[in-house]
Structures are given as C-alpha cells and as structure tokens.
Image (cartoon, rainbow, N blue to C red; front, side):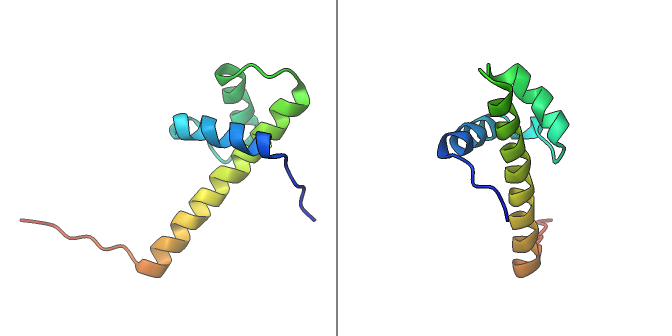
Length: 80
C-alpha cells in the first residue's frame, strides 16, 4: 500500500517544481539537496516528505508524457 500525503505537502512540492522544473530529477537525494536551497523547512520530516513527493511527481509527469507520446505518436513536420 502507498502512503497518503497531506495536501500541504503536495501543494508545496508542486509549486516548487513548477517554478524551476529543470532543477529536479528522479533522484530523491538530489531533490532533497535542491529543496534545502529553495525553501526553509522547519523539520527534517517535512523536508523529506516534500522531497519524496517531488520525486514521485517528476516520475508521474515523465510517465504521462511517455504515455501521450505512445498514444498519439510523434508528429514532426518540417517546413522547407
């Protein structure tokens, strides 16, 4: 079973990722270090929860993007 995260953790993570999506990756530890510089967390538990959700959020976005590419195919049109 998965864990259910609080809505404030999800909101914080999504806002931070939308501000700078290129800085985050699929690696929890790298995301944790980026978050330390981006925001001031009052507790280690909150930092880890947000970092975990950021990692999960990035994986979910990539999965959706991959699924859309498979469904619709890549349509490239070049204008000469």
